[in-house]
Length: 261
Image 1 (cartoon, rainbow, N blue to C red):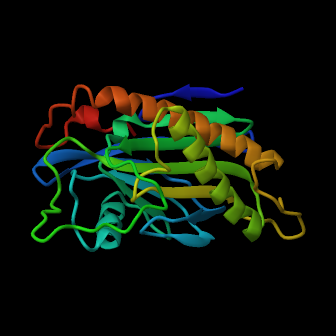
Image 2: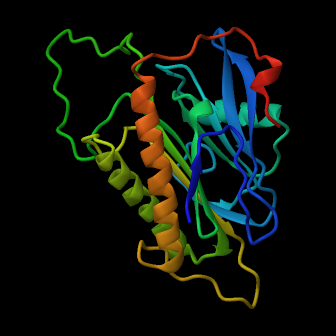
């Protein structure tokens, strides 16, 4: 059974014991209060990710998904994310993602022990295979002034040990489920140019077998696909509604209610 809700803090059982707890924190940046989500996973997790910080495959102990201003143009986002992680007291290797979307509108779905947490911003929907842009002389490609935050960030937690090949397959499965959800939500796109995915699985235990597969018809891949699909679909629909009213009124510095530890 799949449970979905939009809350800053998400909890789901992992291996029937420790829950996946996602906290919300905040900092002052670029003249406004910016929120970010934290999963302090701790040891015992391997992750595969396309994120700018901590991407690739390896042992990871935390995941940070930081909201930045629309039109973010720093050329060192990995350093920026590392600074935010250090400010939160995060140690060891981790994964850092960024988005201009409101992380407060994160959507969560659970299916058969798999948890998916998604932040959705579809201001720049695009097809993966698009023609090479050809600008006329003097064309201005600066950031538009309209409210167009983009990026779909997916963090999924699968509570079993998986082989390297299976883990990469889980990443592909999550991406396929995202595209399916976007099409169902009415978007003619495969995502945005800056989307990122992170899938976490348990670290293998010596002497115990790992799950070999992660495709959409494997047991854990199917659960992952359903969880990601539901969370992205809810996020896309919520993002469509949010764009009719624009972003929430900003405030310059964090308030007590910005923190949900």
